[in-house]
Amino acid sequence: MDIPNIYEWKHYKKLLIIPIILTIISFFYVFHIKTGIEFSGGTLITAPISKDIDVNKLKREILNSYNLVELDVRQTGSQLARGIYIQFAGERSLIAARDAFNRGDFATTIQICKAFTGELNVSGNSSEVAATYFSNANEKFKNSLIAFISEKTGTPISDFSIRDVGPSLGALFWEQAKNAIILAFIFIIVLVFLFFREAIVSLAVIQAAFFDVLIAAAFIAFMDMPLSLVTIAPLLMLIGYSVDSDIMLTDRILKRKTGTIYERAKSAFKTGITMTGTTIGAVSSLYLISTAVGIEVLSNISMILLVGLFADLISTWITNVSLVLWAAERKLKKKGRL
Image 1 (cartoon, rainbow, N blue to C red):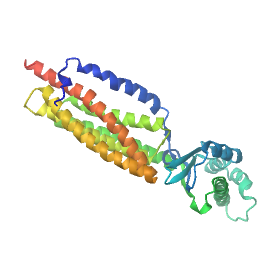
Image 2: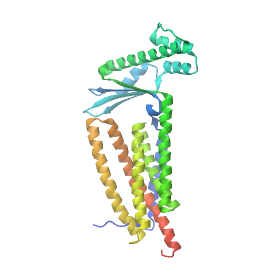
Image 3: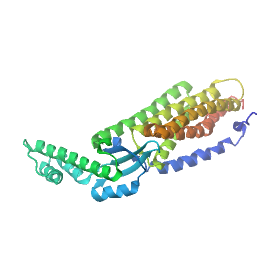
Image 4: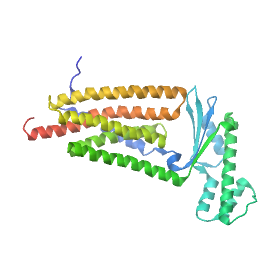
């Protein structure tokens, strides 16, 4: 059965209210997105667990015993492969010790660290002594925390993995991630404009990619997932996918000569739905399998991609097609052919 051509409906632009509403809602969530330790700096502790745990209770117990900043405790994975995920910006006393060391106040650094290490037999200049005290204090704190979590969860200490990212390195990662996204958009605008020579078309392509990324980022915030190197990766993938479908649509409407522009839009719609539907099927399989076996990285990537792909259906086949048809209609009216 042949589907009706909605693009021949003279009021098809009214459908733009859908992406406008979604954009407004998404902006609200995006402003509340959290950054992971790769971007903000901090410590991440992970370990497999054999049974479900009360993460809120564990978080309260940790905070009652340790003065941690921005603590986040979550259970990850599925029934087949559970895990514990504990992230925090740092221990408040050790953060103060680090700040004192960075400003050259080595005496204060040593004094704070002695609460963790006791008196150490260390020789050298003030900087070297303070660095040794801080390193030992940090190590003792982590060992104590892991032992505490091990006791509460029943997970052997040997199963724990710990990762640190300094605040300066995190800031560098965040700057590089932002630059990568900005450069991607700039190159898209330039290449699309050079190919089609239409400002409206360039705007249409860039808005579609922006919309896909915005919706996916809002989903990350809604799910309370941290923005990290893992979650940045699918956002960049979505930019590439969006451009692919949008260029196919634009080329079909503006470059082809057979049929009316509305018939070409419908033809492009059929092709695009097939492309995106196939991709959604493949990514859905990846999500189901990775979730079942507890591969959190692949599960998160595929989940974000799925949301972005559904967003791409809206941005391409409502917003982008409306803008491209508008540009095509203007050309035809100037030539007196519409």
